[in-house]
Amino acid sequence: MKDIDRSAPVIVELTTTIDAAPETLWALHTDVNAWPVWNAGIDKAHLPGDFAEGRVFDWETAGLSISSTIMEVRPLRRTVWGGPAHGIEGVHVWIFEPTTDGGGPTAVTTLESWAGAPVEADPEGMRAALERSLLAWLEALKTAAERS
Image 1 (cartoon, helix red, strand yellow):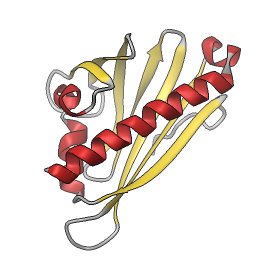
Image 2 (cartoon, one colour):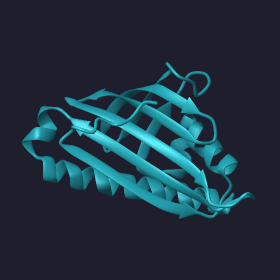
Image 3 (cartoon, helix red, strand yellow):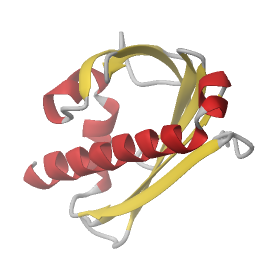
Image 4 (cartoon, helix red, strand yellow):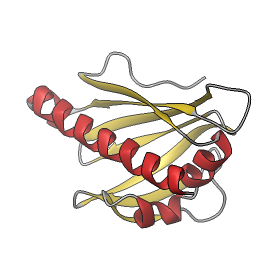
């Protein structure tokens, strides 16, 4: 199983409970091309083809262009992607855990590591920026899933 870089200078892990079935969350999460529709923090996103291991998707957030490689896909349960962006080596894990046997709610955990020279130059500032970004992403996912 792939994981974040546990030795990275910046690691953020957040969990929230969303009143939606894993299938609903998975559909939103893996439709990369639709991210900008429900997540205001993402300006553009393009994944040619299916959400599958080895695929590369391009996206823009906060004025930064990023290419991420999908490293692990466990349908309805877990994804991992990552890659270099502007001197930062990032690895992003998402975990979906049903809290009941029915159609929700689902515990959603997102964790991400950042390493590289820009991170080492300002680890606290980078940690704060990453935490803000992930909190906003979780809130956007929650809002989109709960109105579906």
